[in-house]
Length: 453
Image (cartoon, rainbow, N blue to C red; front, side, top):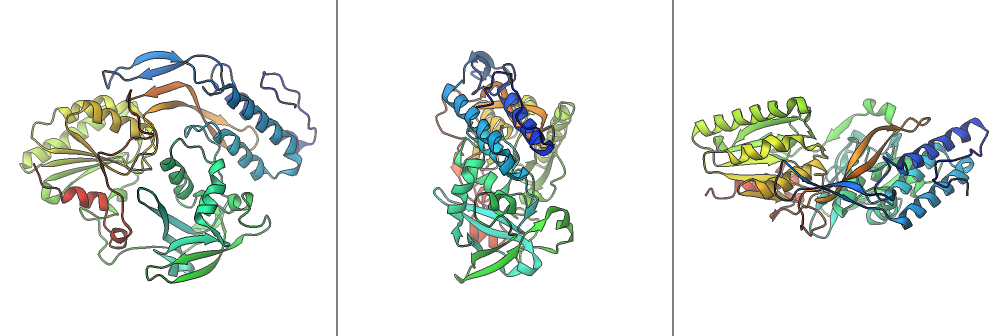
């Protein structure tokens, strides 16, 4: 085998295209196997491990090994298979093969992007229960408007469950919740979900290599099943598509509207008084609050709490971390003391779901441990509270130019002794299909129905 992972490599291809793909594959392999900054599961040395035992602010620092010799052997074996098959693979197939290789690490911080150059115009809203996930169409090309709110059952006769199992080896995840989040909603915005990624559907054999059309099978709310033949759209042409989004007859940005959470997706964070001023709702869109804004965040939130307290009717505070894939957890330093400094008695809720990941699990977990009287509400989170690896940023394949993400340096454990696979809410509340049809956020409605203490 040409690649041994020892830092020495002799290239085997001379033809320009094959050589460039070989350089990309070797670059990724060397990055993950780097003796200093490689992935902790692939490097045989002790890594820094931050354990939050008695403080949300300071961690105890340990040095532990996450190394798995069998995993390293499998990783190198897969790299060699990709190298030897480069002449037979398209560029997308090389990229997706690399994604499958990185996914064996079971680390959601380490992934190769599942690039969608062509996508089918069905934006999926997953509806969860404790044991199932069902897919409904929330927006689409206007010519497919009849499938809005319908359940997606199959593509080219293959069930959604069957397709998800074929996608599973390509997706980097620790928990089932994060797997479904990545597969059904994607990591890079609307129309990037693997389930509707035409390039990926070719790769896993759902549609033929030279096809860009597929038969989608739906069931509407009346129980009627129907098929739509859809054509994939190149990303460069999506702006020309007439997109229609489902909106209920009663839809509005109200206290319990499903649209409230996304009414300002451009701000890092924002707040609004609900329920006649008795509820302060704080939406945190991203964990990536820059260090320069940490104390600005504190000032803004403190002012919002003060205004709500002055009104004399503040009974509850809601911090919404749902569909927040993380960032840097620096603002835990101000958020938790701020929660503990509130003078008036009020209920304090933190909302999480399958799209809460990394920092958006770290901060709710630390708040639950160290802030007073916090209730976690929503769906099980996307990532665990331990073995959260830091990210090595700025890594890009030299020729294909796609960014790759790699966990490195060690890990975090923000809740020692916590035994669940991911952070669990104190009160599990899932968005329901019936509330979706009526434009209602099931979680907010549940909280607003609670009796004030």
